[in-house]
Image (cartoon, rainbow, N blue to C red; front, side):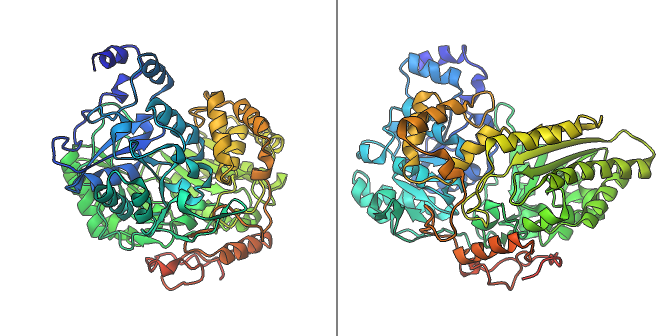
Length: 596
């Protein structure tokens, strides 16, 4: 494409669009099915996502499949493509998206929904499944946003609920077998566990009446994991390969969708983790590698890793990065492994009362121990993450956030006799998400969000060594609307996109006016989506069997209002219901503070 070469000279960061990175698939292989993984955000963010790396590797190892990638072009590139009448294409072969057999979107965040339509428009592909015949690719969706697929269900032919490793291969095989017969493909896909075919489900009052069971990879040690990872040509957000320690979370924080969506907990053995690290580094040449999970410090074999990683890192001449840790999992051994001048924790709430409401299972003693241990190990910088707008929150809980920071200052001076510590506080607005005990809770209004943010700002501006950041309240409101939307929400997404909403997860691109105007045009009450739900009212996502039962989530919600905590996941527990998929991996710390 000569025109493309000329366009690349005009746009910001052209390296996003050229492909040809070290480690890409063999585009000259024989294949029967073409699959393009689409990520509805820019290259730098998409290439930092572990999920698409896993799927890219799995699909390209199938002898019948050629899998390529595409990312959302930044608006300058999108405008150039439109102006030059060039349809959106893949990175590997510059094949038009509309010429693939399968176009699979990895949907990680609700605020990316309009970017899906943006990419489809650039590819000249109709938005709605009902408007696409066999001449178009099968539109496939997966990722954590499928916890409630209804807002985007009308756009897609097939949706994977849960783990995608096996489902993607099965769908590809069906497309290979019945290529050219969309009706048959959809019928066969519906038979796969973990697959939702929106056009074939029966609706009653807008709610799907079919039962769809979540897909679960039962044993991570047997699950494929990429040892040959693509090395980007440009710097990306997380510019290092990552090895997944375990899937799920032991904690059970009641605001957290991922904790319940990814149950049961399944771990990868430390022997395999270490082998993966060694092979990935040797194959890629990276000088840094990360280990990751929802709560890395709770990894059952963390002590084995602590003993083995320093020697392996020295042998490979690499550094190992560990993400933010739970306060109650941080100890002297972990501090040596993560030795750094800065450390990140997420207390989430400022008082013990509110931490009990959200089932954080972290005490003031845990906080004090962690702070002291970090300071003793030369930590001079703390990043703390909190959430505002949680159920039952008062100004006293906000004061508790400030008090924790003041405690760090005092402990630092007591232990070092210095005042050179720096604290960065970030607050996110609570967004009620499907598949969590707080899925029925109403989000506080934008006015109250702004009050709480300003309340903390006024407190922190008086303390010289504290920086305070907060999430945009208007974005958080729309996120809540989209997270708990139904089939009608697809029209809202389309209308907002038509008015100009794209890259809504980017603060300088988001404009709530597009959404308010779209809702007004359609007669949609946005507050009804973000507001409180009755415990007995049907939820748009209730048709999905997540393993965790709705009764369990209801009971957890009721316990939260009484300030009662619940023990985290352990090996022999069958209470939540997720163990019917697979047995939870045993946990080393028993979360003694909780009760069943």
